[in-house]
Every structure is written in structure tokens, then in C-alpha cells.
Length: 301
Image (cartoon, rainbow, N blue to C red; front, top):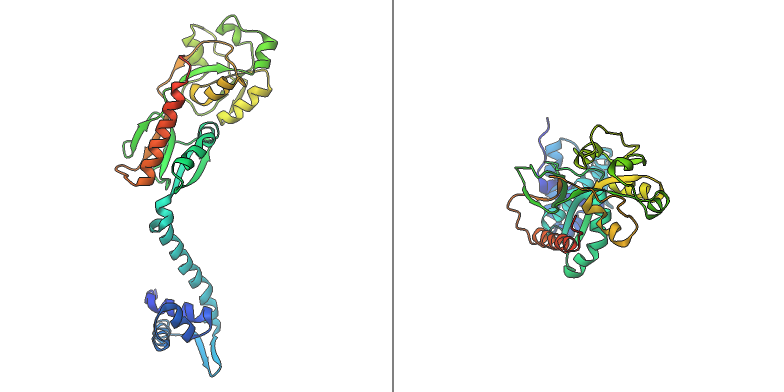
């Protein structure tokens, strides 16, 4: 396998081919025209082929030189971009945050303007997916993960303490009337969200409803979809308290039954161990304050 050519020789060729002149390449690279010419000759010897045809009126690329230029230019562009992203100003000011789509939509997005107002020098890049569980190879600066906090190779801090409860639209409650019991609630279409260890079976058992474990009529992969469906349908959704608190507060959802069930699960703040970068500390501190402020207004379930 041919060994990689010297970097300076590659730079000299790429600049000369792109600019069409050893002199202009030397100006860009801050070296003499002779130094550029020497580096190009070194590269040609290394590759054992001619890259330029030297003519009185200037340089002309050979066929192989013309083919070599685009990937080389792209490689230098990628190298520059990666260096800037990892070590430049962007790396110090851009914060990459990963969260579940439901957490991002219902809690994070409505509050991000407050972070940017408090920390105007930072920029945010938010990515989301239906289920955000911890991924060991994630390149996010901060992850907001849904689970049980058992990620020993990361710095983990619990954000939320939650309960399971049931919600429906105000129109559904008006039409059907409040159920007299959890057992009577089972006559309604039951909605649920996939991906949780707990569900209707456990909630009903917690309400002392024995021997009745109806399947959910509709199952969704995100709380967002489930909330949209329950607002427009006639069903009742079993969900975790944190993500529906704003909807309960503004009245777009109501609780047809007061029964709750505690859960060990919740949302966790997950970062690299020992990460003391100012941008990470700033975002984590802000998010914890927002969650505490949100929690101060939570109902006493």
C-alpha cells in the first residue's frame, strides 16, 4: 500500500491546482513560489506520477492530477471543519442537547428562550427521538434520558420525580361524565405510550381493581402523539405526570380519575464524568432550575 504523502506537499499541490499558479499558492500558504514548486515535485516523486504539465503560460493539470484535486480539497475542508468544530470558537459556544421528542416539545422548547436570554453567547443544537435512552456512543454534550438512572459510566443526576395518572380532554369528560371508579373507567377507550415497564395493568392493580386487565385500545410511540389523540378522541390516556402538567394547568387536559401510581422511572440529566466545560455547566444549572421551578407549581398528587 502506498504510504501517505507529506502533508506540506499535499497542501502545496492542492493550493496550486485550485489557484492555477505556484505563485498564488505561495501567497496563500505564506511561503515562496520556489518552496511550493519544490513541495509539488516532492509529491510527484512520492506518487511516481506527474500531476502538472508546466507550460510557459502557466500550469495545466494532468488527467490524474485533475482527478486527485477534488477529494484532496474535500479532505482539507473536512479537516478544517472538524478542527473548528472541536477546538474553535464553535466548540466553546455551541451546546449539543439530546432529548426525547416528548420532553423536547412539551418541556424544553417552550423554555429555551429563557436560556438564550440568560446566556446569549451560547448556541443550542437540539436533537430528539421518540425514545431517548442512554447511548454510550452519543456525541451530545448533554443528554436528557428517560429511564432509571442506571448508567454507571456517566455522570447522572435525576431531574424529575413522577407518577402515573390518567388524563382526557374536557369534552370527553363532559360527554361521558366522571367515572365512579377505576373499574368503570375501563369502559372508556384506553390509550397508552409504548416503552415503559409500567402500564394499565399495574395502575389498575394500584387502584385495587383486581382481576381486570384490559388491553390498551391505542398505543403510541410518543407522549406527544398520545396527547394529540386524547385531545381529539373520546379515550383516556395513562401517562407520566411531568409531561402533562402544563396541559393540566392550562385546562387542555383534565383528570377524570384521581388515582395515581408512583414510578421509579423519570428523566435524568446525563453527561460525561467530570465534564467541567462552562457551556455544559451553564446548561445543566439552567435546566435544573427550570425543573425545580416547574416542580414548585406541580399539584400534590
